[in-house]
Amino acid sequence: MSLILDGTAGVTGPAGNTTTLAVHTRQVFLSGTAATYTKPANCTQLVIRAKGGGGGGGGSGTTGTNTGGTGGTTSFNSVTAVGGGGGGGGGAPTAGARGTGGTGTASVRLAGAPGGLPSMITASATNVYVVGGNGGGSGAGLGGGVAPNDGTAAIANTGAGGGGGGIASVTFNTLASYYQAGGGGEGEHYELIINSPSATYTYTVGAAGTAGSAGTSGANGAAGGSGYIIVDEYY
Image (cartoon, rainbow, N blue to C red; front, side, top):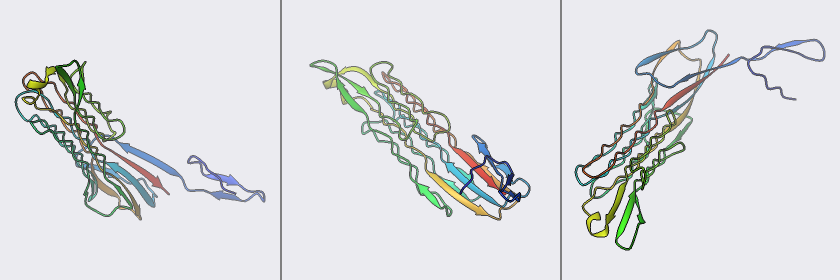
C-alpha cells in the first residue's frame, strides 16, 4: 500500500505505530541574477528543474537585419541551461536556434525547439502577405501576419521564443526587397538531483530575448519568454 501526502508528517498504522514521512517543500524562482538560494534546515536532497530564456523574434522591413536577441542562460550553481537564439531578419531570414549545449552534469537535459521561418499567404493574383515565423516551444509567440503585422510575445517564464514580424500586402515583384523575419528559439531544459546539498547556491534565471525592431515598411518582432528554476526540497 502506498500513501501520497502533501507534506504532512504523521501516519498512524493499524497497530497504533506512528511513522513520520518526509516533508516536501518547493521554491520557484522566476527572476534573479547571481542571486543566492539558501537550503532549508534539515533538507537532505534537492531536485532542480531549470529552463533558459527564449529568443526574440526578428523584425521585418526593407532595411537592417533586425535580429531578435538571444535568450539568457539559466544557471543553478555551475549547471546551465542555454537560452534560445533570436530569429533573424534580413534577405535570408533564419529561424532562431534551439537552446542546447549547457554546461554541467544533469540527470535530464533537453534541447529547446527551434523558431519557425516566415511563410507567404496569397492576397491576390499579384500580391502576397508574409507571416513572420512562430517562436519555438510551448507558450511561444506567433509571427505577425495580415493584422497585426507585429509578432506576439511568448508567455513569460516558459522559455519559449517570440514571434517574428510580418509584412503587409506587397507585390511579388517587390517582395525580394524585404527582409523577412524568423521566430525565436526555445531555451534548453534540464533536471538535476543534489544529494547532501550545500547550505547555499548561486542561481540566475535567464532573461527573455529582446524583440527585433522593424525596418522601413516592416513590423516588429516580439520578445521571448524568460526562463525559470523550480527547486523541490526533501527532508
